[in-house]
Length: 116
Image (cartoon, rainbow, N blue to C red):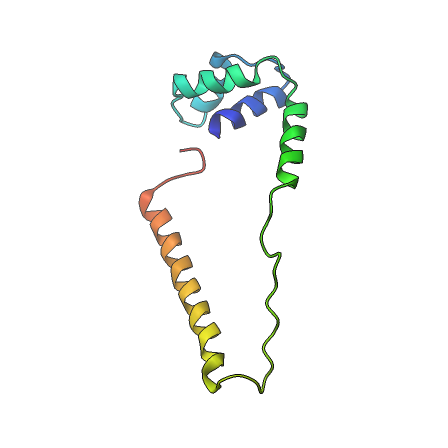
């Protein structure tokens, strides 16, 4: 992803056909070493193509991807069902909150940044 981002930055900067050297300069400016194999793959895939057309074709593909939430559960009536049904959603929310906190802590511990 960082190679694509650097390629797009170069194109936005006016370089319509960035070379590996151009992308390496962009990446090194933020302290990232470029992997030549991945860099060459990105350049070979995007070389000679209009970046705007590539992004538009990607957007049309994304439009066909289901985003979830298509099926909604009906809300439970206040007086219906067993007495203990109110506790289950609360317990699920607590688990989600705990899981979220753990993931935030693990990200800090690993020391990854945006461009690592």
